[in-house]
Length: 196
Image (cartoon, rainbow, N blue to C red; front, side):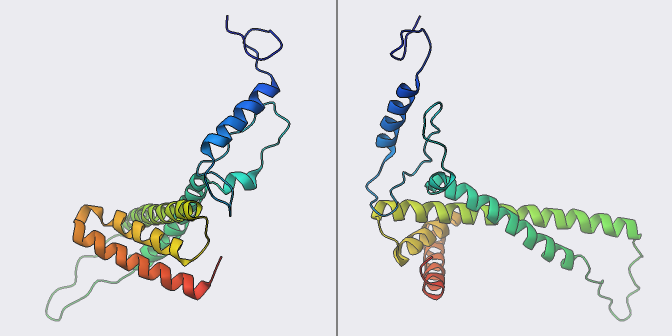
């Protein structure tokens, strides 16, 4: 049987062992960031230790920021898809002079088709917004922690990486164009909104 801890009991881990393990893992994950002081990954929960779980410290980790941004971005994209999808399905058919009117479609069929179309738009917009916000916030956070500075450069690098990743399937020229476009947009937003 494996023994752990200082109490001599087999298979029992004491609070001191967990604290020592947590401090070792924190040192491994620690970076050189003097501004934020948090690692790229969330801190591991200390089971049985005296230090309680701190949600604010957890949210300073880049993975947690990226996941939170993906959820919020997906919700915003879904809402945008709902609005745009609901307006696009109410367009009346265009009639041409001398051409007979198209046959009338039953209201039940029209509503079902509009609902399916709106659902597709919600999913597509939600997925796109979630991807953009997750990549941007994750890259921006990692750059900020690596540089240990909070300035406009982090947003520009995050925007460039986001634009390049989104255009990766279209080739190198599209990646460069996407990088430049998202970086310029990020720079404009950062200069207008100021430091956040």
